[in-house]
Length: 125
Image (cartoon, rainbow, N blue to C red):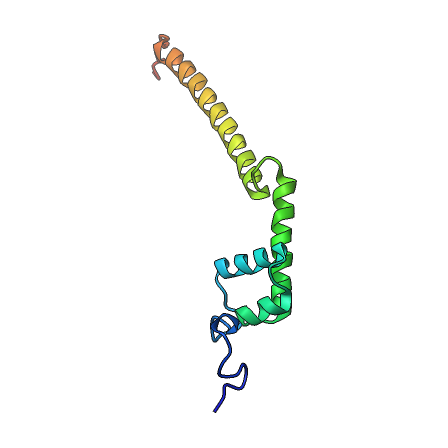
């Protein structure tokens, strides 16, 4: 009895690596996209090798190209989220500095008031 999908004498390299299509590790997806971009294999070959549909390989390729495009646009090396967090941190540091200055000024004023002589209280008689 022969294997229905590939035949009994199919090489191991052509068999899908897992029984569950579409569940691939990041490393497997990266290798597939690198092979595709390097011209080492076509979409159909990679789909067969990894046991996924050709559309899945194409989506992996599009995702990788989107990531490359984003990396090229950044320039500074930080993501949009990182830049937003850096801005919020700078604002928080500025606010903390201002609060510290205000606190110190208030403390000095309180110290001045404490050292000043007070008037005697009037009697209620």
